[in-house]
Length: 160
Image (cartoon, rainbow, N blue to C red; front, side, top):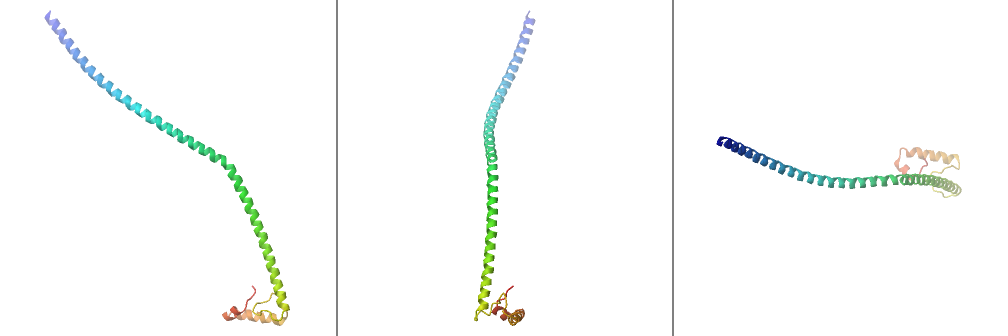
C-alpha cells in the first residue's frame, strides 16, 4: 500500500504546487485588474470633469450665439436709421451748397454792378460784363499777354 500512498502524495503535492502557482498567477492578475480599474476610474473622473467643462463652454457659446442673434434685428434697424440720417444730411448739405452758390453768384453780380457804376473800380480784376467794346478788347489783350508773361498774370485777376 505504500506505493499507492506515495503516488497519491506525490500527485497531491504536484497538484498543490500547481494550485499554488495558479493561485499566485490569479492573485497577480487580480492586482493587475484592480490597477486597471483604478486607472479606469481616474480616467472616468477626468473625462467627466472635461465633459462638464465642455458642457459649460458649450452653454456659454450657445448663450453668446443667442445674444448676438437677438441683437441682429436691432443692429439692422440702427444701420437703416443711420443710412436715412446720412441721406438727410447729404440732402441738407447739397441744399446749403446750392444756397451758398446762389449767394456767391448774387455777390459777384452785385460787385460787378458796383464796379461798373463806380469810377475808381479795381482795374486788376476782370469784370463779368464789360461796359464797352474797348474794355472787352483790353481784357482780351491782357489775358493773351498773361499766357506768356508771368508778371502780367500776377498783376491781374482773370475770370475762368
